Image 1 (cartoon, one colour):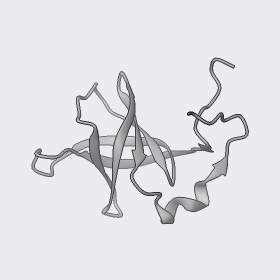
Image 2 (tube, one colour):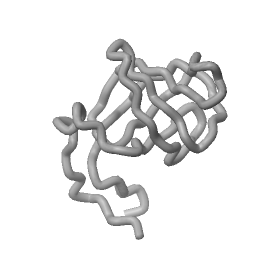
Image 3 (tube, helix red, strand yellow):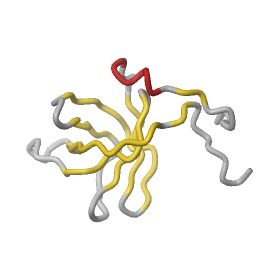
Image 4 (cartoon, helix red, strand yellow):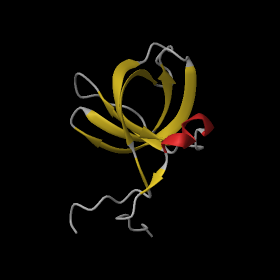
Length: 104
C-alpha cells in the first residue's frame, strides 16, 4: 500500500479560511484555505509557495480562535499542520482511519 493514508484519524473536507501566523512576523500572517481538518491537524493551501519555521499558529476566521502547532509536511502550495493539543471543538469531525498504520 504505497499510497495508504498514515494518519490515525481521517480529515473532513473543509473550505474554511484561516491565517497562518509566524513568530516575529508582527501578527499579520498569511491567508490560506483549510482544505481538510480534524481535531489533531489540518491541510492548508496557499496561493503561492511559502516558507515558514517549524512552529506556527493558525488563526481560524471568522471565529478568531488560534491553535498552535508544528509543520508536519510541506508540498508546493500546501502544508500539513499537527496541532500541539487536539482541538475539542473539532472532535465531532474525528473518524478513525481503518487503513492507517502506526508510525514508530
